[in-house]
Structures are given as structure tokens and as C-alpha cells.
Image (cartoon, rainbow, N blue to C red; front, side):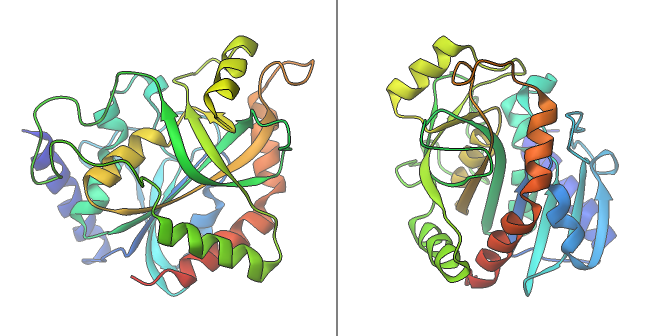
Length: 275
């Protein structure tokens, strides 16, 4: 069974569980940020393990399930946790749920992540609007024969993060009186944290934050023609910035502390997006 057929089978299973629910927006929630799914109204929950061909999520702070329901007036598909390449998965597997969402008719994705600050003007708790990303690994969810049902062979990544959605994020932040950083996310494969030398290199290349997710999903979503909005929650200062080791506990603690204002911003953006 090829990848397109597997995505169709997964989408058909989900349609059977949800009664044909058609999501308008997919929200991919990073480490400790899955609480957004708990805000869905009239929700149906589908564990990843129940969906045919769907990889399981094993990372801390990732519940590993889909939530389908109403969020800020929109039909939302929320990923409470994601899967990562460092869990032993290929980029095509990491991107699988994005392609399933596209098969369900979803045309917009809001993606979030927890990150470490490279930019010395950033602090834990800051939210960064993603303007672009850097990926220096050769791996891609598009490697191999192109599947035209997903998209074209050579998708353009000039505006991977949709300019109109970035404007909506800025407007939402202004309306809420929230500060909003804007910058570039750099992908590292993990699961080890980056070295101080790698962080200095990332800063020299123009990165503002670093993390271990997001980019494979964004590539697959752009390939499928989806509009994309990205937010990065700064959970710590990256390696070498402070004289202390990095831990996963501080990432989850920062996500917990940001629940109120992060959800307020994201829900406002969902409300303002015109599908």
C-alpha cells in the first residue's frame, strides 16, 4: 500500500469515528501545549494508536491523540502532541498526520513548538511568530517519487509561513495587548540538546530560536497547498547562553506557565482566520 492510500485509509477511519467532521484548521501542538485541545467544544477524541498507519507519540508532554471539535467558531482538528524524527521515524512518517488532515479537506495549519532562544534579546515565556525556518539536514518528507495527489514535485518555500496569516497574528497580538517576537526557527534533529558551538553557528546563520520539530510538518503542508501560521514558545535560553544545563522539565514548566496568554493569542488568531 503506497503512502497516498495509507493517508486515505486513515482519513476514512477518522471520518467513521467523527461522522464526517470536516476540519477547517489543523492545530499542531508542541511540548506541553496540548491543552488547546481541551478547549474544543462538542469534541471527539481519537488516539493516534487507533488510526491506521499513524505513528505513536512517545515524547514527554505529548498526549498522542487527535481532538475534533469547535474552537473559536471553527471546525478544528487538534494534535495533542506530535511525532518527531528523533523517535526513530522518517520525515514521511512525521508528516503523515498533516497529509491525513489534507485528505480530510483541511486547508489551514497552525503549528506550535517549544524552543530554545538563540537571540539574546529573547527570554523564556516569549512567543515568537515564525517568519521562516532553517533546515540544514538532507532529510525531507518529500524524498522519493513525488505523489501528485499531495502536491507538485518542487514546491515553493519562499513564503512557507503565509504572510496573510502572519498579519492576522500581529493584529491579534495588538488587540490583546500582547508582546510578540518575530523571527526564524532553526531545526535540529535531537533528541540531544544542541551544543554551545551549534548555537553560535545558528546565531551566525540568522536563527532566533532552535527546536526539534515543526519543519517536516511545514514542508508537507506547503506541498499540500495549505496555509500555515507558526508560533514558537521560548521555554529556555539555548545551550551556552546561561551557565547551566538544559532539561526537559524547564520546557514543560514554561509551557504550563504560558497557558493563559498563549491560548488567548492562538484562539484569537483562529477566530480571525477567514476560511
